[in-house]
Length: 517
Image 1 (tube, rainbow, N blue to C red):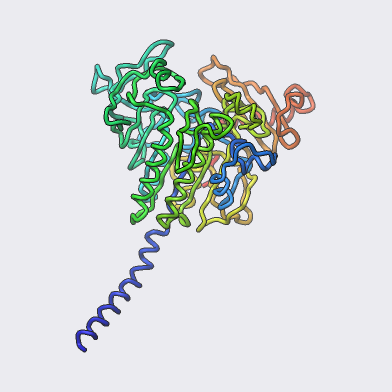
Image 2: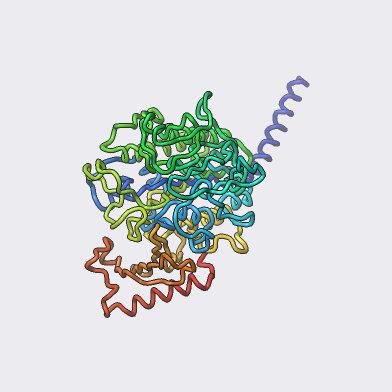
C-alpha cells in the first residue's frame, strides 16, 4: 500500500512538473519556423493560380503552389527588385535597392568579388540575431571566394574575356564570400546555379562530390554534348559527374533533410531555399517526389515548372509529417520575370509573363512581375489577396516584423515591413511608390499611383548620373504598356514626367532610406 501511494505521489509530481514546464516550452518555441523559397526565372504566367486571374485557359497546373496561395495571402502586384538575377538577389538578401550595391548592374560570375562586407545586414545575419538556426540551400550567385592555385593565400580573381578559361581556381573549398561568411549556419551551395562555372556543389563550404568517382574536371561543350545537355555559359571547372537534371532533386532532398533534422530543435529554423528551376538549361529529372516530370508537359520549360511545384510539395509534406507546418511561415517568390526562350512553350500557348509586356531583362512589367505568396496557418488568414505593391526586398523587414527583431543602423534601407498587411490591420498603408531596376541595358523604373516612368541610364557613364526618361505609361488604363500609349513625348504629360523624374532623382541621390520597419 505504501509503495502504491509513493508511486501515485511520484506520478502526480511528475505530471505537475510537466504542466509547469509546458508553458515555458511553448513560449520557447513560439516563434515560427520560416522558409523563403526563391524560384529562378519564374513568371506570374507560369503559376496557374495567377494565370487564372486573367485567363481560364490553363496549359499547366501548379497545384502545390496554388495550394500555398490558398492557405495564405497572395500578392497580385508583386515585383522582383530587378529584371535580372544577381542584382535582384542582392536586393532580396539585403533589403536594399540595387543602386546601393557596389556592383549595381549586370550578372555576376561564381568567381566575382562579393557585394557584402562583414557588417552588411543579410537575411542570414538578421535571423541569427533573432536566435534562429539558419540555412541556405541552392543557387547563391552573389560572388564566391576560392583560393588561387598559384597563390594559395590569395582569393582567385576572375579572368574575363571571350575564350579565356578560369582554370587556376581551387574549387575544392569556398574560403570567402559564401553563405557561411554571411550569416548561414548550414549551407548547401551552387555558386552559380546550374548555368555557369564552377559546375559543382558545396556543403558547408566543402566540395560535395556528386558521385563516388567524382573528380574536379573541365566542363566544356564536348562534355555537355556527351551528357545530353547544352552548355549555357562559360566552359570551366566542375564536378566530373555534373548533370543539371540531377541538381533539382539533390537540393530538394537537402531541404527535406534540413527540415527533418531541425524540426524538434529548441530554436526555430530559417531556410533560404533558392531553386535552380526554372532557369536554363531546361533539364528536368525523370521523376521527383514519385511524380513523373521529364517529357510530361508540352515543353522543357514547362517540365521545369512542374519540377519546381514538386520541390515545394516535398517541403510542405515534410513540415506536415514533422507536425510543424501550422507554425511555419513560407514565402514564395521569384528573382525576376519569366523567360521567353522556348518555342514549344509558345506553341502550347503558355505565356510566362501572363498579360504583361516583356520578360526577364526588360524594363516592362513582364520583366519584374512575379508571384509573391505568404503562408502561415497559425499567423495569417488563408485564401486572401492583396493588391498592395510589394518588392522582393520587402522580405527582410517582414521577417524582422514577424520575429520581433529590430533593424538598426544602415541595414535594410528600402525594405517595407509587410507584417501589418499580412495581419490585415486597419489603417495599413501601402508603399507610396515603387522603384525598380531593369536588366543589362541599364534602365530603372518608378511607379506612383499607377503611373510608370522608365529611365535610361547612359551605358558609358560610370557615375550613373546621366539619366533620360524614355517611357511613360498609365498602368491604370494600359497595364499592357502598349507603345502607342507611351506618353513620354506628349506635351500634355510633361508635368507628370517631370514629377516622377524628380521623385526618382531626389530619392536616389539623397541616399535616404525608403523603408518601413
